[in-house]
Amino acid sequence: MFLGTPNIIDVEASSFGSHSYPIEVGIVLRNGERYCSLILPDDSWTDWDESAEEVHHISRATLIKHGKPIEVVTEELNQFLQQQTVYTDGWVVDDPWIKKLFYTANKSPTFYVSPLELILTEPQMEIWHQTKDKLIEGSEDKRHRASFDAALIQKTYVETANHTH
Image (cartoon, rainbow, N blue to C red):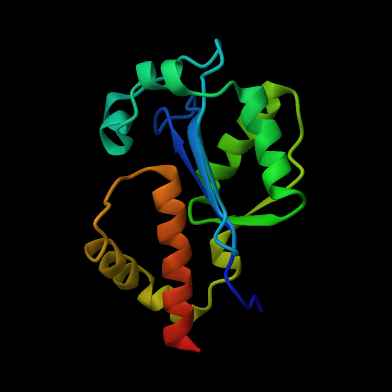
């Protein structure tokens, strides 16, 4: 059984389709350290969905102006995470986006991405959504962005663990 506060990763993407790609990655480590970066799309990454943009409020123009090159983001992720495991509540999409990022950069991640469900207990799962909703209601910042979402997921994990142990 997992004990403690997990490292959390969250990824925002260009669309919800099979040709989507990562546009922002956010991480909160168990010690509170954070990493967040917009990602400059590779020339081959052209898929874009307006409805996804409405959710995360990141335009393609913003990525082109403020995004870091994928080689820089992958190097920073490897340095920041160094062999650690990061958990995601959206593994079925976040893991492929991380793989696409590293594949396009022709690099390998030095860290592991794992489904959050592997460390959640049944009692935590039962109160997950209501706990997360309360944390969102109590937050002044309600942005749907990678770093905010990663911190929210981590806080939800800690709250549900505290209420079930």
